[in-house]
Image 1 (cartoon, helix red, strand yellow):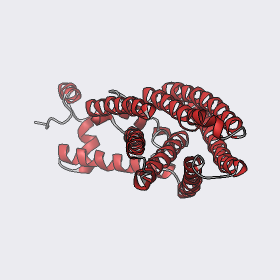
Image 2 (cartoon, rainbow, N blue to C red):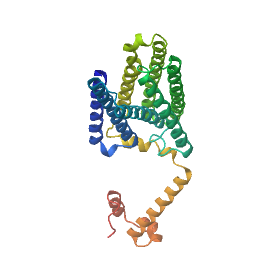
Image 3 (spheres, helix red, strand yellow):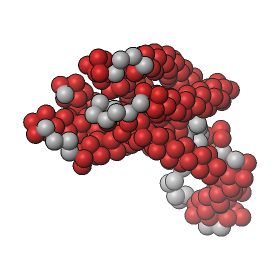
Image 4 (cartoon, rainbow, N blue to C red):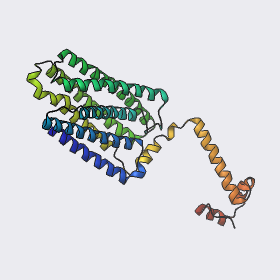
Length: 311
């Protein structure tokens, strides 16, 4: 119980810091900053509800199904949102692409649904494994699919991250490239940590179940939560809002504009030029001849103030 209280305080501190940064640089924010804020809020809500659930259970001795269901929902939503946020960033959303294609979004939604279902089953089985005579093989069977799915998600993330880094390197975006190189190492450490936690879970649950109940929370709740908070903190440091956030996000997508869009942009620029000439010289056709007939003094004045009318 104290663990979730401490976890809630830590997540609350991170959330407050992030909100203050977003308020300070609100004109520089883009989608990923808002998503990180939402994930931080879910982490705070999850820790708080688990804390209330355990306090109520210890004080009354009654297992509140409502609080338990709420805690499970927030836990699963938080973990799913976190994975999908990292995946979206590695796919280039808000980094090199303003939006993702429909097929990719569909795959992400299907993956999220499967992940939520398997995680809900896992949380319920782990929660009732102490009070119900649930066979150990069945408990392990509920742990393994989630771990395999985690591995598949991490594989997709690393493949997307590798492709994104190659794109950034080819475009010469060194600052963005350095950020995602750091993210690569953070995720690699997170995978190694997750594998260690999984092996520890299998080891603990394969032994005498009643005799090891005091150790189980450290591997089912403690270690994953600590690892999650560390990874979240590292990602927040990488994407902390600053005065150049929106500028870097916009510049990263300049080279990815389609030829059709570039053609439209050039046409719009030509129209704007004609409008300017018509406003300045009276008729569009006389614009360039009028420019050629300006005196040297007028040309110097035009360079200083191009919108000043000709006298």
